[in-house]
Length: 197
Image (cartoon, rainbow, N blue to C red; front, side, top):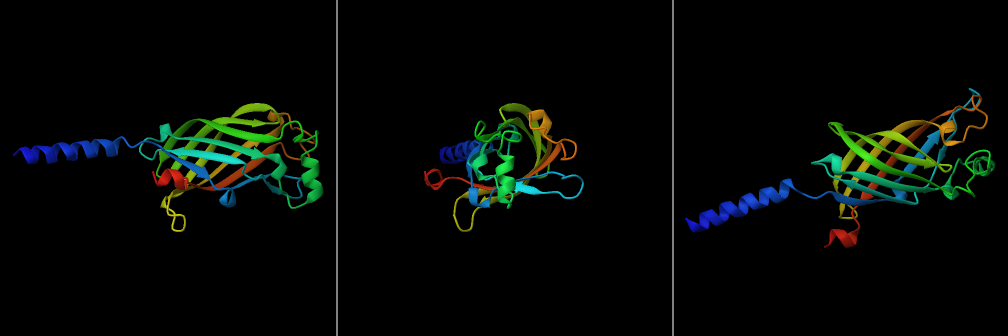
């Protein structure tokens, strides 16, 4: 009888620990992360640029998404439109002024589950020295052990639209659109040193 009670107690403790699992911290993979932004040019075309990932951390709790968070730094030195002269122009003072403001950052303030694999991620976006609240519509693509890395991994897509003039980058509006469409795709994994602890 005593052994049964021990087994029951152990089972209850295991269940309690499972329901109170801590959020997991993932490092975003620069090789599988794209931060794409696009705009309209005089109504004729919709160019797209990628800002390479400098550093990114996702804390994700699938049981309680409100405990999740995102923190990302994007270096403007890595901005890539595939047109070198346009890269140079976008980094100049009339646009992003990359010498004075070398990074774009996003730090979440709230993560809200929307049902299924959908989330609203609200946070502070800092561009050109100006910080404004922005909400990302995020989708969890997949969560599980990465088949090659053998560590827990998550993959997300996210989209939003911002007005560049609100960040002090309003040159040539409205001929060059004020609205900037942003699309993000990323894979993030638990660092191997953490996964083996």
